[in-house]
View 1 (spheres, rainbow, N blue to C red):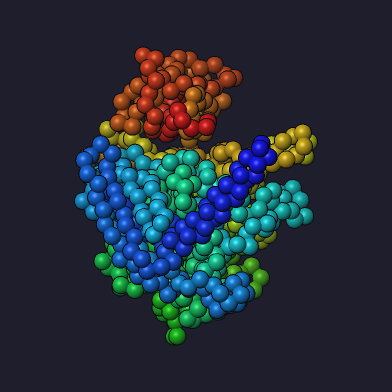
View 2 (tube, rainbow, N blue to C red):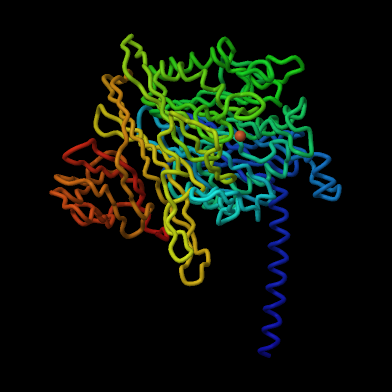
Length: 639
Ligand SMILES: [Fe+2]
């Protein structure tokens, strides 16, 4: 009898398993790409997804606490641009690749600014639910995260990238494969609860291979809410050279292969409309305002006549080339240059901070740091031509530039003069970041490169520390740049740029991989903006800020703030809620040398536990400017 019951349970389990597999296959057909967010404004947002059939789907949304659920039915459109190539079909699908998918785009309007909504998308028998947040009205604290060069493809699994050893000429392989590296990076990004995620190009390995895009969306979307980054946080992207690359086995960068490749990218991403652009160039470059910042995304994948010293890709043909495609120029007098200047003028007047994102890093020490050309110490996909935009960036006070392409964590600084709207000229400096360590390469500097603007290079500035065959600290890893825009008082705002990386942990006893830890490189940059009236900002200084670690973050019971060892004298550590109210003073006395850690248990001064949510910490010292950051209290988290 006992055995019979066991058999019965076993059969039941098999039936349930087969049922769930069938449902899972059905769900995959319902959602080829699970829903994701794009283009949030103060009163609207776009939800996109792809289905295997032309069945309309439905979006329902509501604001918690409000009455009423609103809904809209989608209008699916066939996306022939996302069909598998004949080569993919025959090589990987035995001639039976799925047909092209159907694109569902719903733009939801009439929303409140800076508000969180719940939404649910139903497609066939599957559904996905999550939340979205509209853009804030005016200047409010925000966080965004930027990386590039994820370069996804199914072949990333089991592919351990080259990991140059700063102390040896011998090549090594990185500790974990590219798929795990990117997945871990996205896990850390999700845990930081940013408002936006920026990707500075080279999202997939081959922009023309559908399998590589499938891999990108498997990483970034999911049926499970907590695992879907793009379903909770809108992505802003700029195209890289790989978005124009059809692939090794297809037509590479040639025409019309490169246009077929970029058309996949343009089908997936919805950029804000730019009235100055031709319709068909929409999405290749755009300007985007979100609360206190403007982000300008550029397409610098090609320029001028092919093979000229101003060209960033000698294989790709663009708008100036006979037989060329739609890849836009960016040199003086080009439409993109003229448009860029108009956007910079607007941003300097209206935004507290201006950030520019494009793929080709202009200042670096990697393989693309050599001038454009062919031969020794030259590069036919060089980032150097992008330097022609630097005078424009300086003149209009761009605060930082985010790039990739060299797949090396490097920060360079260029100094010059900003011309303020009232005509005043002030000294200005811009940090250029190569954040191309999303999930593919982890390069070191190239022999023969000479980057006189370099301020920080992980390969040289963060030595690896090994104990008993285990890496315990330092080294070059997959990661991203975290940017917090925070008010210090009524007139002063900080942009805190924190380089974060995902450190793989190993057990010392048996060398087995045991997980990951978010860590920060000691190169935090703090930009300060002083607001003189409500619209015009003047007074600018850029300097390095000492590093503050806050761990764990998010936290459930207790978090620790660790501030610089060199700090002595009066130190005050305060906690504010998201509305800026002071709720707890953790420390307000003379600090001794030695231990510089302060703990917070998630309680107010009165001892009452605070509600879960976002909090700001501020550390004020006798000397130097205050340092601020964000910490998330989530009693139900695992931390
Ligand atoms: Fe690239």
